[in-house]
Length: 133
Ligand SMILES: [Zn+2]
Image (tube, rainbow, N blue to C red; front, side, top):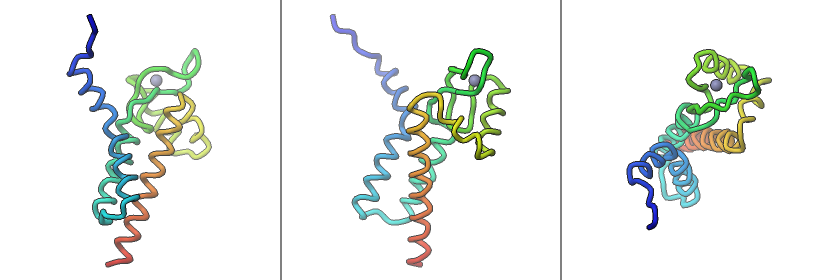
């Protein structure tokens, strides 16, 4: 008998990772040059907010036994521990701690890169919209 994943679990996975799919669509939209700057700005903003506040990551804040391995959401939000939430926000504000934000796993590094690309995409699309207006 072959075990199949529950349809609800597959949908839950999509709920967690939809920002990555939107990021791929954003890159595709830039590549095709068929999409106007308004939609590019909207997609870039949504993708940036996803990676800042919803992307599934490890917490990574300094704990008693090394970096915290609890699940968290987004680059700016720590795990369920209140002190970790505040510490991660403090790290985000101070540039010298920015390397600490991406030490949990390679996924954190990928998240930072995609967040920066989507932010840059939004800025360039805004520039295009302003230049053409
Ligand atoms: Zn934590």
